[in-house]
Length: 136
Image (cartoon, rainbow, N blue to C red; front, top):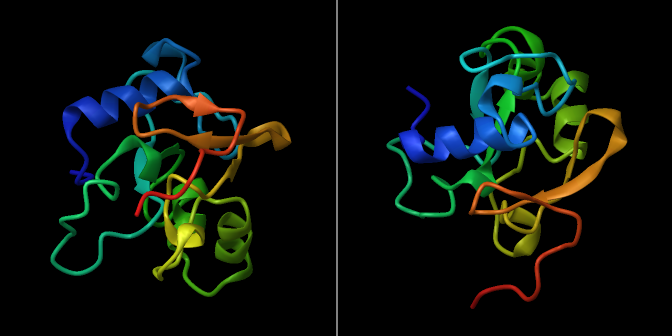
């Protein structure tokens, strides 16, 4: 279980499949995953005991990645303090905890496979433009 609702998981897989879950690919490397492959990564970790912040449980904080917590792009995100994890952080697939928009998944861009820059919306869509202003 990823901690995301079935609705969010469906939105993310559909986003990663350019509108069809059956075409879903790893958002970091482009590996084809289809309707059931890969795992959904929390870009900003829930922390021990989970999180009550609705943004943490939203599609803006979710990335469909190949592998497991130990392999593939998902493993790269989980390999804390390694060059692989640092690269995934630079690409927006890992977000550190803190205060301010640079720690809010809605305002942290991702660099998808092929070098495409997008922002991930809570509605499960990609955006080519950064979101407006920071919510108070």
